[in-house]
Length: 155
Image (cartoon, rainbow, N blue to C red):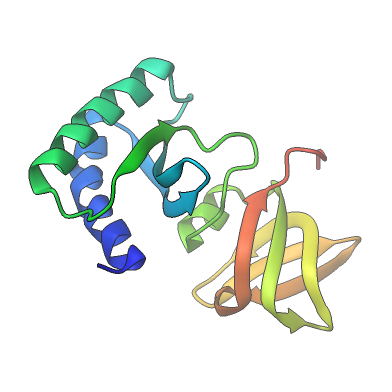
């Protein structure tokens, strides 16, 4: 089974669980590391995620994954908050954090640049507007390889 398919199936299992608990899904990672395969689920809630939230979701998701048994590898399950440098994956993430600073790495350059660090000014169906050193760049979502909030610098 492909890694992407495993992530899709985990997402289908975890979303209803998170909705019930009043939490939101930020991201899911499934990758091989030194300790073996690791399944990471990042969750959030307005006002913050507690250790109790992470333990509860880990326990319940672990039980669902045991029943469904579609992951063909032995793996470690980790559930946590995304941290201060939260990833920005979807348009909704960028919309939510308009006015915040972000680091954005592109797969294809925009105006000769592949790395941006600036303030999220807005977004639409096609991309995000980012102000960097006084200039606003329109970055297509299709070119974004990785994006995170930038906790190191205040606006």
